[in-house]
Image (cartoon, rainbow, N blue to C red):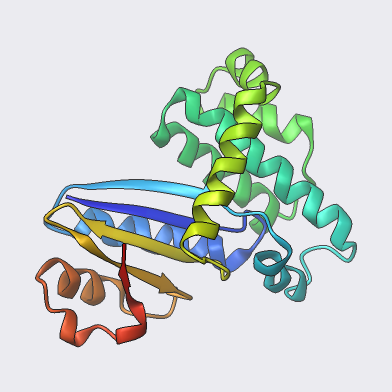
Length: 196
């Protein structure tokens, strides 16, 4: 089984595309997987999103990214699959349809995906949700993740090694992951091999 930790910036279109690409590739692999999406909020990772012109006011953009990240972590209490559906649907509303982030959009998305709005509001306002988001940031710092999108991947059959993929929207994900799973590390660029 492989375990994937996918670091994203919620308002970055490249992160949105990478989520779709990685999900598709994971489903096509002949192995079990555990997929964790981790919104990463830092000035370094958000710089690219700002350069893409998502918001003219970087302060507002940072606030919205932070809010979306808390929303996603709050939805995790209803399961990872539903939380990912929520995140995709919210990103589609904001990035594709160009709607403005608001409580109304959040309620609409939760209703559309069949989530529990009352539980979401309770979790959204809890200290545990904020603590979980901070823990995700610390996890990213531990592995020196500074670019988004990035994925940290471990194989349970070989837990001493993992790989970090950065900017993988344009890379051949399926080939890289199959090489990794088949222990063909010689074909993987050395800078991508990570030792725990």
